[in-house]
Length: 170
Image 1 (cartoon, rainbow, N blue to C red):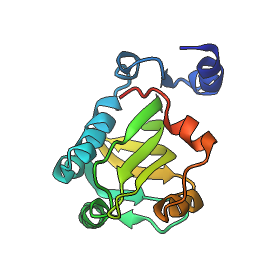
Image 2 (cartoon, rainbow, N blue to C red):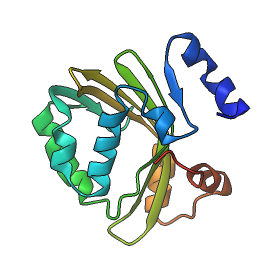
Image 3 (tube, rainbow, N blue to C red):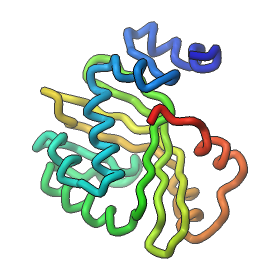
Image 4 (cartoon, helix red, strand yellow):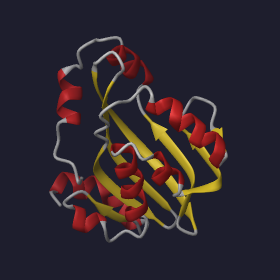
C-alpha cells in the first residue's frame, strides 16, 4: 500500500477496519470481500440470479443515494432486470476496499455500454451491510449529473478519465 492509500485508510484502520487497495490478495482477507466480488462478477457475466442469491430477503438498496430505496429481494430483482436492459458489456471494477464489522466499503467505477452504444464510466462508492453472509443494505454514491451527461453523449472530463482509468483490484 502506498503512502496516499495508507493515509486515506488510517481513520478506518484506527476504527478496526480491514483496508485493501494494493492487491486482490489483501482485499480477500476481509470476510465480506468474496460476497462483494461474487456480486460484481455476476453483474459482469449478466447472471443476475447470482447477484440476487447473495441478497437478504429484507434488503434495502439505495441504487442512488438521494433516490427512494428499493426494498425487498423481489423488488430488487425486478429493478436489476430493468437496469440490466440499460447496461451492456458491464465492466464494474473496484479500486479500493475496506470493511469494518458487518459493513464493506468500496470505491470503483461502473463502466458499461448504453443501449445507444455510448461508453459510460462512472466513479462511485458503495457500501454494503451483511447479515449471515447476505447483503441486507446496499448504498451507491455517484454523481447523478455526471451520469446523465455521460448518457447524453458528453465526453468525460479529464479528471474523470483519470479516476476511472486506474488499475483496479479486479
